[in-house]
Length: 122
Image (cartoon, rainbow, N blue to C red; front, top):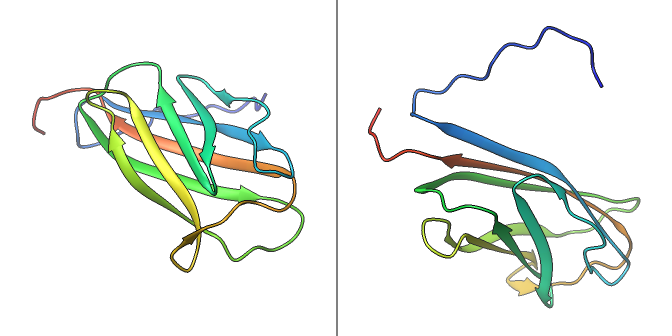
Protein backbone atom coordinates (compact mmCIF):
# COMPACT_ATOMS: atom_id res chain seq x y z
CA UNK A 1 0.00 0.00 0.00
CA UNK A 2 1.27 3.47 -0.87
CA UNK A 3 2.24 5.44 2.21
CA UNK A 4 1.41 8.96 1.02
CA UNK A 5 -0.71 11.74 2.41
CA UNK A 6 -3.55 11.58 -0.12
CA UNK A 7 -6.11 14.38 -0.27
CA UNK A 8 -9.82 13.63 -0.49
CA UNK A 9 -11.29 13.72 -3.98
CA UNK A 10 -13.65 16.61 -4.52
CA UNK A 11 -16.53 17.10 -6.92
CA UNK A 12 -19.00 19.87 -7.62
CA UNK A 13 -21.84 17.32 -7.60
CA UNK A 14 -23.13 15.98 -4.29
CA UNK A 15 -22.14 12.51 -3.09
CA UNK A 16 -19.94 11.40 -6.02
CA UNK A 17 -18.70 7.83 -5.50
CA UNK A 18 -15.97 5.96 -7.40
CA UNK A 19 -15.76 2.17 -7.67
CA UNK A 20 -12.63 0.87 -9.37
CA UNK A 21 -10.52 -2.23 -9.69
CA UNK A 22 -9.14 -4.90 -11.98
CA UNK A 23 -11.09 -7.80 -13.42
CA UNK A 24 -8.99 -10.66 -14.86
CA UNK A 25 -10.29 -12.74 -17.76
CA UNK A 26 -9.07 -15.93 -19.45
CA UNK A 27 -8.27 -16.54 -23.13
CA UNK A 28 -12.00 -17.06 -23.85
CA UNK A 29 -12.87 -13.69 -22.31
CA UNK A 30 -14.53 -15.30 -19.29
CA UNK A 31 -14.08 -13.31 -16.06
CA UNK A 32 -12.03 -15.32 -13.55
CA UNK A 33 -12.24 -13.00 -10.51
CA UNK A 34 -13.91 -9.76 -9.45
CA UNK A 35 -11.70 -7.21 -7.71
CA UNK A 36 -14.06 -4.24 -7.62
CA UNK A 37 -15.61 -3.53 -4.24
CA UNK A 38 -19.29 -2.82 -4.84
CA UNK A 39 -19.58 -4.40 -8.31
CA UNK A 40 -19.17 -7.68 -10.19
CA UNK A 41 -18.48 -8.25 -13.89
CA UNK A 42 -19.52 -11.29 -15.95
CA UNK A 43 -19.31 -12.23 -19.63
CA UNK A 44 -22.88 -12.53 -20.95
CA UNK A 45 -22.30 -13.08 -24.67
CA UNK A 46 -19.84 -12.61 -27.50
CA UNK A 47 -17.79 -9.55 -26.52
CA UNK A 48 -20.56 -8.57 -24.08
CA UNK A 49 -20.16 -7.99 -20.35
CA UNK A 50 -22.53 -7.05 -17.55
CA UNK A 51 -21.37 -5.05 -14.55
CA UNK A 52 -23.79 -5.48 -11.64
CA UNK A 53 -23.58 -2.99 -8.79
CA UNK A 54 -24.24 -4.04 -5.21
CA UNK A 55 -26.49 -1.00 -4.62
CA UNK A 56 -28.82 1.32 -6.53
CA UNK A 57 -27.45 4.77 -7.44
CA UNK A 58 -29.50 7.69 -8.80
CA UNK A 59 -27.13 8.38 -11.71
CA UNK A 60 -24.17 6.99 -13.64
CA UNK A 61 -21.64 9.80 -14.22
CA UNK A 62 -18.91 7.79 -15.92
CA UNK A 63 -17.71 4.30 -16.84
CA UNK A 64 -14.20 3.69 -18.11
CA UNK A 65 -12.70 0.36 -19.23
CA UNK A 66 -9.09 -0.22 -20.26
CA UNK A 67 -7.88 -3.60 -21.49
CA UNK A 68 -4.56 -4.79 -20.10
CA UNK A 69 -3.04 -7.66 -22.09
CA UNK A 70 0.26 -8.64 -23.69
CA UNK A 71 -0.58 -8.06 -27.36
CA UNK A 72 -2.41 -5.23 -29.06
CA UNK A 73 -6.06 -5.65 -30.03
CA UNK A 74 -8.24 -3.28 -32.01
CA UNK A 75 -11.12 -3.35 -29.54
CA UNK A 76 -13.22 -0.40 -28.41
CA UNK A 77 -15.20 -0.79 -25.16
CA UNK A 78 -18.65 0.81 -25.40
CA UNK A 79 -21.39 1.14 -22.79
CA UNK A 80 -24.60 0.01 -24.50
CA UNK A 81 -27.05 0.35 -21.61
CA UNK A 82 -27.29 1.25 -17.96
CA UNK A 83 -29.97 0.94 -15.31
CA UNK A 84 -28.05 1.91 -12.16
CA UNK A 85 -31.13 3.58 -10.66
CA UNK A 86 -33.30 0.43 -10.89
CA UNK A 87 -31.71 -2.96 -11.64
CA UNK A 88 -28.09 -1.84 -10.88
CA UNK A 89 -26.72 -3.00 -14.26
CA UNK A 90 -24.23 -1.51 -16.73
CA UNK A 91 -23.74 -3.44 -19.99
CA UNK A 92 -20.69 -2.90 -22.16
CA UNK A 93 -19.37 -4.49 -25.33
CA UNK A 94 -15.92 -4.86 -26.84
CA UNK A 95 -16.32 -3.77 -30.45
CA UNK A 96 -14.26 -4.18 -33.59
CA UNK A 97 -16.00 -1.72 -35.85
CA UNK A 98 -19.64 -2.32 -34.96
CA UNK A 99 -19.24 -6.03 -34.16
CA UNK A 100 -18.99 -7.43 -30.63
CA UNK A 101 -15.69 -9.33 -30.43
CA UNK A 102 -14.31 -11.80 -27.90
CA UNK A 103 -10.84 -11.45 -26.48
CA UNK A 104 -8.26 -13.90 -27.83
CA UNK A 105 -5.91 -14.07 -24.84
CA UNK A 106 -5.95 -13.67 -21.07
CA UNK A 107 -5.61 -10.25 -19.49
CA UNK A 108 -7.43 -7.78 -17.24
CA UNK A 109 -10.07 -5.11 -17.47
CA UNK A 110 -9.15 -1.98 -15.51
CA UNK A 111 -12.50 -0.43 -14.63
CA UNK A 112 -13.54 2.85 -13.00
CA UNK A 113 -17.19 3.62 -12.33
CA UNK A 114 -18.26 7.12 -11.24
CA UNK A 115 -21.70 7.36 -9.66
CA UNK A 116 -23.86 10.03 -8.09
CA UNK A 117 -25.34 8.92 -4.77
CA UNK A 118 -27.71 11.84 -4.30
CA UNK A 119 -30.69 13.43 -6.01
CA UNK A 120 -29.74 16.90 -4.74
CA UNK A 121 -28.72 19.31 -7.52
CA UNK A 122 -25.31 20.99 -7.13
